[in-house]
Image (tube, rainbow, N blue to C red; front, side, top):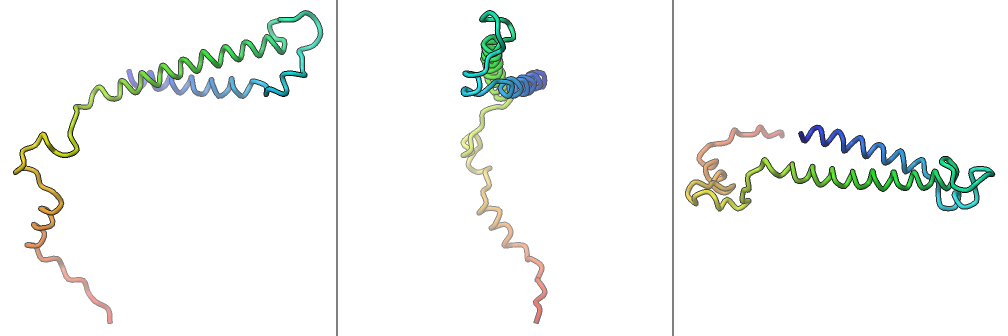
Length: 115
């Protein structure tokens, strides 16, 4: 299930990048019209801007929803653990110092010295 949502999330992200790149900048959209005729056609400058703005908003909402879904689903399978080891008895925990003390009993091989 996570894989499906992740693939949908990536497709939404790619579509959102494409839609944002199709939009015109603020300065370019003011002076350039879609040609003469009536105002408010489907693919005129204003109609395209409204369509792309709505599409961007819808894709952003879907991206937000899939992000929340993925974050909630990723934490479900893990059991809560303590980084301090409070769930283990004190005598069974072995720290770094204990492992170093055990290493003192073993003789390390000598390193050849160059003259």
